[in-house]
Length: 163
Image (cartoon, rainbow, N blue to C red):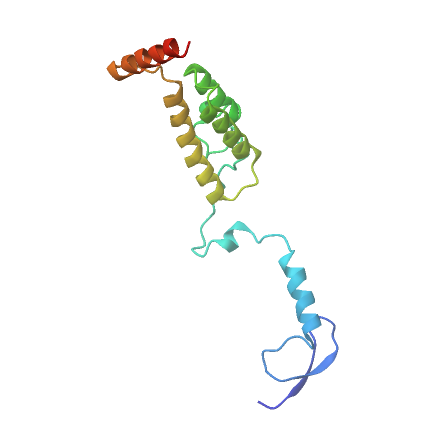
């Protein structure tokens, strides 16, 4: 293609376009436009949905949607923060004072804080579930069996011998 003179889309300066698709006179103008458009607010929801339908807003990690939202059918179950709900559950199980219980509260607070990506919230939720189960196991009363009785007798004899 022969070179043509055209104005730069950014600064308006005429330049020799080497391609018919070129828009800018220099890397500086191209970079300036690129940086400006990358800081622009996100496009409308419908523009992001290639099917042309509407995009339903899901609850964020920071908390539930408002009570009037049709996308939130379980509003009565969504009172308080996740950390409060986890604390209440762990208290009922007498597992709040375990190491896993303390870690579960910390993970729930991170989820409540929000600002994490969807995949991060999914990972944190999975970890929260694992920690809650571990706290429940840690808090469960330990049932003594025959091996425990033998271990107790051996330690008692060792204690007597050491005196």
